[in-house]
Image 1 (cartoon, helix red, strand yellow):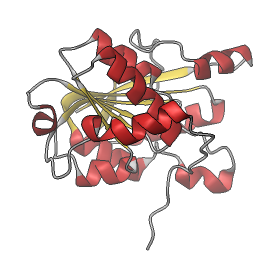
Image 2 (tube, rainbow, N blue to C red):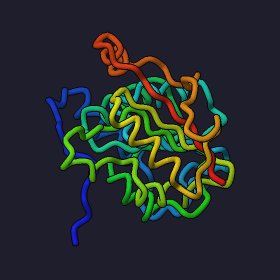
Image 3 (cartoon, rainbow, N blue to C red):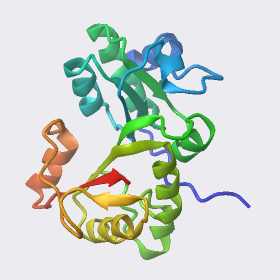
Image 4 (tube, one colour):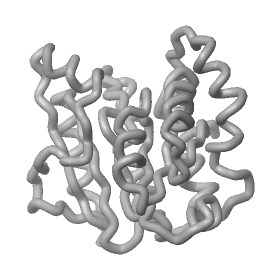
Amino acid sequence: MRRVQTFVRREGRVTAAQARALEELLPHWSWPQGCAAPAEAFGREAPTVLEIGFGAGENLLAQAQAQPERNFIGLEVHRPGVGQLLHRAAQAGLTNLRVCTQDALEFLQQRLPEASVDRIQVWFPDPWPKKRHHKRRIIQRAHLDHFARVLRPGGELLAATDWADYAEWMREHLEAHPALENVHGAGQTAPRCAERILTRFEARGLRLGHSVADYAYRRR
């Protein structure tokens, strides 16, 4: 049976600069075909951060620039955002970033070995607000099984949303997973992650009166 997708490709116009970045830069920064582990993809052993759905890449770019001692993997299916990140990564001369446009769940299952990632970041995923679409939400038991498999023991899973219904959904599913424990105590939200910059997307939500819920869990 076909697996339910957690995304749809709502692509706007791809600018000339983004199209050029996709054509010329993606081969350089993409996750290498056949790579079996982050150490192979980056050519070094280093703490590895995986961001699922990086949007326009503002957070991922800022983190990779500020933390050259870490490896960063960004997953995003929307081509304009990928092109924008690649253009800025090239300007910054980053060497600690790899990008993949594959479905995140397929990437987790097919590309990453067990216990190979130190942190997974899922910030402001699509809330899929209609009840009939809740099965598409990225945070749920079957998907968390894949997250837990690739996280090292003690590794972090950080999530955030500005959609109140999804915040409660996240809490219920994260608390129920046997491989994860809440860093701040059962059922508690987390302080805002200091590494997460205020993006245009989050700022817009705050202007609209949305409250942001952060969660931090640790791989048992």
